[in-house]
Image 1 (tube, rainbow, N blue to C red):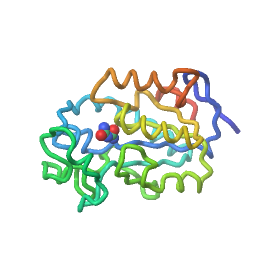
Image 2: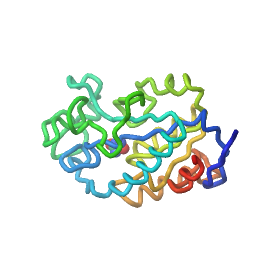
Image 3: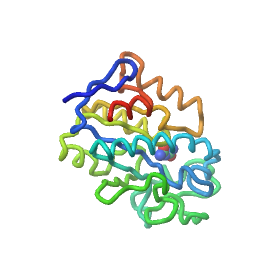
Image 4: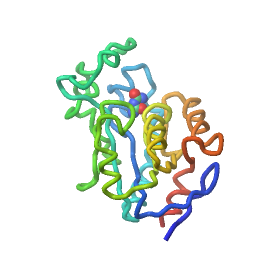
Length: 221
Ligand code: C5J
């Protein structure tokens, strides 16, 4: 039985049994001081506003029986999956793999790599570890979604214009209908958040749809 999400540029009809919530990179390394995000010179407090809407989506998705997928950006401890172009870029205060207050920056298994406690995965919810910005590159996300015949993705997390955008662009090319949940996404650069959302829904929804947590939660109940 299809339901409808009020969204822009148009309402989206969806089948909850073929819909997944994908929460992108809500990790301590991006949201807390001392991690990757701060090492790049960002004010990490700018991401905090997305946490309660993500939590509301998570609660509603779990209650509705949706597949919930969490992603984490990070690298193997030996950095074999981190290209030099990524490791050497810019002038951070600490580079990927260097020690910080939450362990080695952006490394799997370190405290900073964990998803924040407010959004901790439940047993049975897939956690996709990705070395890149997009959640499909070098991961088994496509297999996880295809095993459940998923056609629609509700996407939230950080940051809007980087990992959320890269994932949504590729998901769109792979044929998924993507709804980006605006208030459950955030960026260190507020204008990039706004423009990133505008780019998704422009031109008749060139990459997908944009809604908000209140409307998505209402559609799931
Ligand atoms: C970034 C991400 N911004 N998760 N990663 O480097 O958006």
